[in-house]
Image (cartoon, rainbow, N blue to C red; front, side, top):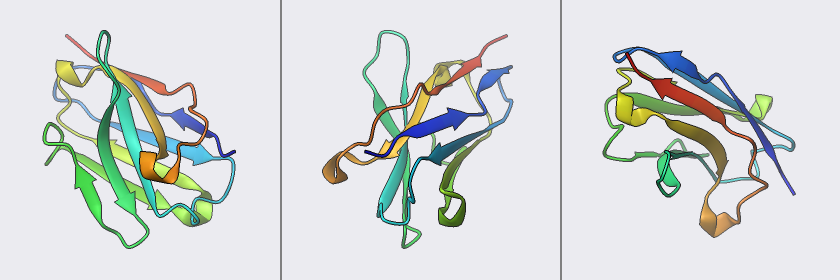
Length: 116
């Protein structure tokens, strides 16, 4: 069972930027689609963005134009570049496969906090 390790979170002021990284315990080239998820306090986990091996990307409406997802199969890594962060982006962020492929083991995630 593949598992993931997320990093790069932290605290930023509104309008700030962060770059999140995720490394997998196995090759991710076998996983057609990889994704970032987040869970805010008192909320359900939600899909933030996904990227396939063909390069197709999908973004949730609330991050379009602000976040960019990318992958490096050779490094077994997934990235999320985040710009123009706002307080409602505050959440714990996770990477994983998509549900239809079967989730790998969830990692501890990385905390993103946006506040004054």
